[in-house]
Amino acid sequence: MALGRLGKRDGKAVADESETGTTTTSKPAKPASTRSGPSVAGVRTRIATVVWAVFVLLALVLAVGALLIAIGANRDNGLVQFVLDLADGVDLGVFSRENGIREFDGSNAETKNALFNWGLGAVAYLVIGRLLERVIKP
Image (tube, rainbow, N blue to C red; front, side):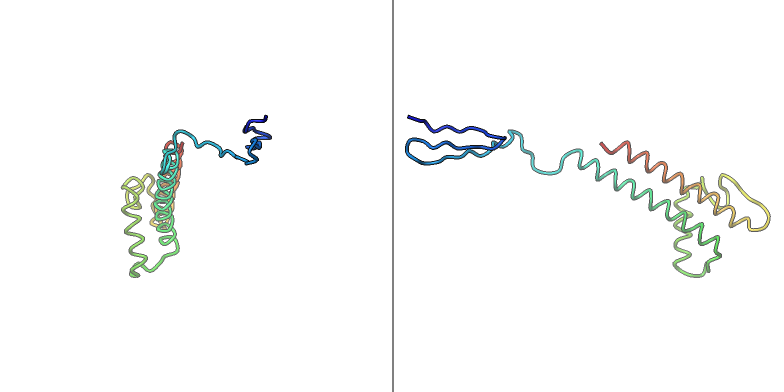
């Protein structure tokens, strides 16, 4: 007499017929530790992405501000004034147009100062943002 047995063939559950003629199959067992919710690695990846996006946004503000100075945009325009004020706040004083790392004199000094200092600040934000992203990301 054949007893009902379960076996595996090619990684799949296979059922044998018992003497009653009924067929039984088995389901793969669930892992013992099933956690619901995001994993730590997933959370760290999302945080790293947000940090990178913030630093890219800060670099973009400085780059757009330098571009607006270079093209001689109308400073009476509300949007231009908003971007320039925002860039002045983002430069942290280290990359300032007026008293930055490098100060140019002579013709077009304001444009040169903005392009050099804010450009350098934008690059610094990108480098720091990428480093922080690599440290945070698993």
